[in-house]
Structure formats: C-alpha cells, structure tokens
Length: 280
Ligand code: PAF
Image (cartoon, rainbow, N blue to C red):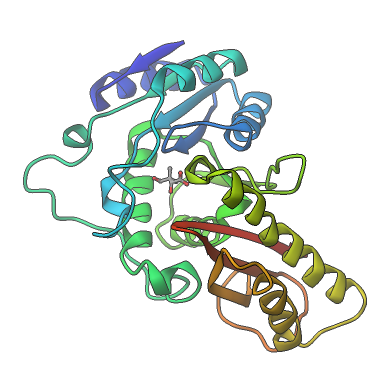
C-alpha cells in the first residue's frame, strides 16, 4: 500500500493505473476510521481494480466554533485498517497541499443544503462540496463511496456530480451500527460513559418512528412528534432537528411516500450526533 502526501504523487499513480485500463474506487474520509469506513472500503475493494482512501480533516467544512482542533486523529491506526482491507493508496495531504496560498474558488449549491444540518452548519456543505470535487479531480475515481449516515451529504454529492457532469458514480452504503444500535461515528469517541448510554436515544427514537410508518402512519408531523417526544425523555439530549424530507431534494414533505429521509441531529452533552433512516 502506498501513502502519498502530494497531489502530484497521487496523480502519477492514478494516471499509470488508468493507462493500464484499471478502474479506481475512492473512499474520501477525515480519518479516525471505524467499521463504517471499513464497509465503504470493502465495497470499493469488491468492485474496482484499485482502491484509494483519502484521510484529510478538511478545515473548510468546520464552522468557527466547531471541533476542527479536537477532531480525533490516528493515522497509524487508519493506515493499518486500510492495509487490512487491501487499499492500494492512501492520500494524506496537509491543508497547505489542498489549499494553496490565495485559494478562492468554491463549489456551492442553492438547493439541498438549506435544511437539516445546513441550518445549524451554514458553511459546512460548501466546504464538503469543494473538497470532494477537488479530491475527485485529483483521484479521478470511477466510483466513490459515501455512507448513508451522512444522508444529506450523500444527496448533495449526488446532485453536485449530476449538475457538474462529474464522471464518477456515487455509491451510497448502509449505516453501520454498534451492537446496541448507536450509529458508528468518529465523534462517538467524545462521549463519556453516561453520554454513551444516553446516545442510544437516537437509534431508539428512530426505530419508534420507523415502526409508526410501517404501521401505516403517513403524516410527517405525527412521526416528527413521536420521535421528538421520545428524544425528550432523555435528560442529556438536546434536539437540533427532527425532520422528514424528500431524499433527493432535501425539502420537507407533509405526507410520507417513497424516497423519504427521516433525519435527526441531537446534542448529547456537547457532542452533536446525527442518525436517520430512509423509506424507499
Ligand atoms: O464524510 C466525511 O468524512 C467528509 O465530509 C468528507 C466526505 C471526507 C469530506 O471531507
């Protein structure tokens, strides 16, 4: 497995693969890899000749009071996991490599980013889109793999690729959970033991919402209320949002039909966690 720190090095390797007619699967990450990332890498491994993983904590997608400085990092452990899955190349650039002096070009979107996480993280998706398009231009992947846990991000990237004619197939992969239901996330590491227990309220409340829908409820407000009431039973939880939106357009829906995303963001203590399910 190669580790590259510069754009030039990645391009040299990828161009050589492309000359041989090999396909490239790409998993963009911010590191501190867990089972969720592993499942993305395994899908990439199974469906492409070569697999590239980027490990880059992207400063541009963090707001001024967010956790950029404290975001967990462990590159040695990340490399070992990548190696165990059979990744061919890790791209691990410094911020200066990605954002050269005078950097001033961004990718932005008028739709999809105004709801859910976009409300409390107004610059987040601009940062995500910009870095993902840059990474796509560097790695030139045939397929790129994103987790459904960040469902809004997945929808935004799919839209960006469509709108800007990026020649990469976006593959969404299911949420990976701990045995007790908590969605895997690098940010789970911030939780102390009491908060870790309290965090189960997210998956439990979503399960309740899903059961309501499976039993015939089609009124979004009723589902939102049931999930909200359930989360509010946990004293350590503070709701950022509970919403029901169309999965493609990320706009609120009154009636639950197909392709609907039920998404929540909840603070457990100081840690903001997200989770969701999609009705296909
Ligand atoms: O999902 C993430 O880890 C990040 O948002 C991504 C896609 C790697 C862009 O920095």
